[in-house]
Length: 574
Image 1 (spheres, rainbow, N blue to C red):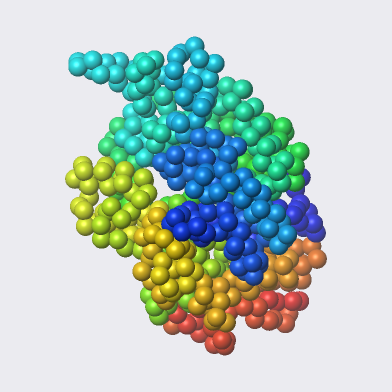
Image 2 (tube, rainbow, N blue to C red):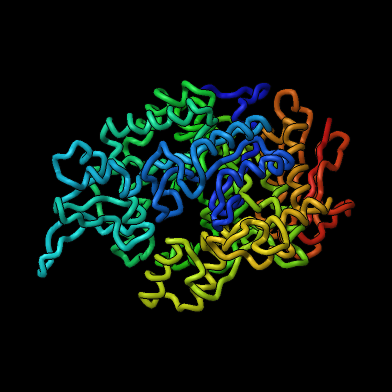
């Protein structure tokens, strides 16, 4: 992997990626669950939008404890989603439409129903025992109960350690008890992973999104979590992030597999800063091409560290600009950004960063799209984002299906830290099911997602927010996203121009330049976005040359006046 010059951009830097959460995308057989034939049916829709690549959340065989992120067979398709023939049909249809497909690689952990783990827990001398991480108890209580090796809290349960009585040891699971962590110290495990990667690449898939990939190397000392000791109820993922051998493992993966195929890769990496980003995605590092970082996702977390992300307050624009600008500047010319506002684990962008009221939803959704797609990096669109889909509020906790939501409810409400009413509000603001309500295709029953009962309740706003309405409206969010994607192809400066933030302390407007390089060095983009519902006045020093208004979410240009949620981009040519 070599650094692209200013005059030559690597192919993997150019795509716009669309994430599909298959369970909630399109149901073809009426069972209420999205499936592969449903995705194939919507390939023309995605081609019309103009995306280059689809990222599929897991479609492998799974007991679905964590909606497919608990895999029991990496070489089989989840029966609810279809068959391997259905996948082959989808892959062919996507490629025929000029769309590549990226699989979700989940190899920090497996399902406890994977054959490897079934074998591993049977006895200490089983050949698969060392595929997972086992520890003796730290001791025993007065009642003879085993004490876990550390005080770590799992993402979806009170402890990262689960007692296995047959062999009288604990196994590690950083997430659910049904998601035991693989032991990457075992070279046989690593070869198993590389083999399954080759299986999918040989079928013709075009890359991998790698789930929590920076957790695969654990500190062999296994120290206690000081935050938990101080009373935190949130997870201990930071205790295993960016472990001592993670870069060695990723370089080996690249050397043995990734470098042999024309792939695109993006790693999901919690608990990283830009220095880590340069290590994971540096052009000369031989590891990953891009990564998902979470700094901007944490800006609206609860001030009480014991509550983690669960909150209902708004982010501060100054903080958002500072975070995004740091990633733009620190990686510039050295590594590559992945750009996103939302995904299957995050709330809906227009509700979180914009304004989802009927008056401003469309304007602010377009504004957010403009800001993101004009940054340097690879833009990711999460399904329904191009429609301006919003967060949801369910009055009954049982209407939510996500294990993280229910685990947090038990931990926080059960301990008395948060009231039931406050927690429902927090879930509506921060919960993962906001992103997982089924796609709203039409205003008819079940939003055109299914002919049966949806696996998760629909957002009741589907009668006003749906794809059929969007496609019939030239002023919809859909067509604005389509225009932004087309602009990236027409103007290389949007892909490889350098970045300069304007007015860092402005609490209402996000404005920045993109300065052209190479063949575009005589060009400058000026991006201006009003993040408020107020009318503002702003002036900026204009670059040299004639200028053109490339795009706007208003039909006219009020010059220095910025109307509510107005976003516009000027191209200057010296």
